[in-house]
Image 1 (cartoon, rainbow, N blue to C red):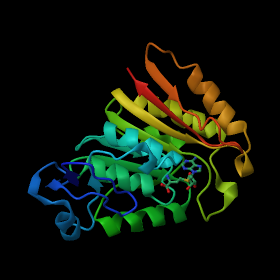
Image 2: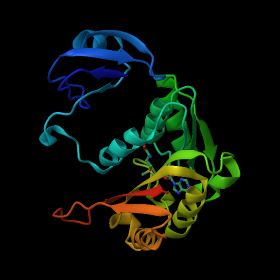
Image 3: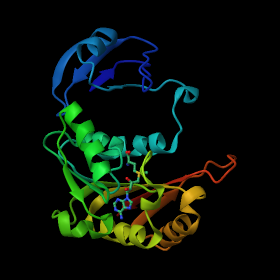
Length: 242
Ligand SMILES: C[S@@+](CC[C@H](N)C(=O)[O-])C[C@H]1O[C@@H](n2cnc3c(N)ncnc32)[C@H](O)[C@@H]1O
């Protein structure tokens, strides 16, 4: 990971301002200090982080929005769960943040999804426990109850896959329930909730109703909205255990 000293914005592969930068590995060890542009060329597989530019330069797509909070949440050595592995983008982020001392579980009901995820992780040299099972059974596989830092749900269907194999209200709610039990105090669940199209509204309504009723003494629930966007925009939500 490369941290810039100043005003660095990437994410789309562009570096807008080059400043002196600190380059650290996934464990947080300092590799070297130098010019951002030099370090990015030398460590092409590392992501670049830094002070943000203006909000106009940020990506507000739902998964990127959730990734901001996930990045703040996960520390090296953490235990994390990707409840919907799909093409593995979220699993990859969890592996990057938890580092080699951490542990990442990733669930999906489709072989194809786990194959895509495995390939993505292999390309980056990351390791995760990939589990071909519904996330509603996650407590059977994740042995560290009460110690999990972050669980990520990105509901819906596998992009480019069979839309009929999408997540469903009943199993999604059971999975959130199990996830809440696995979380440590201060642990977080991130949810990308979709509606309309193939998924209809049933799952979104059911998930929102369920998380609205969580006891506020034990859980902080934050739901965001793309307030003026037409056509049933997705809803990002966070649950934090306290
Ligand atoms: C929108 S995709 C996830 C995208 C993924 N997080 C990524 O980064 O590419 C939703 C995934 O949930 C999976 N899924 C559906 N029902 C599931 C269940 N009960 N348990 C686990 N995964 C499920 C689908 O097979 C699909 O791959």
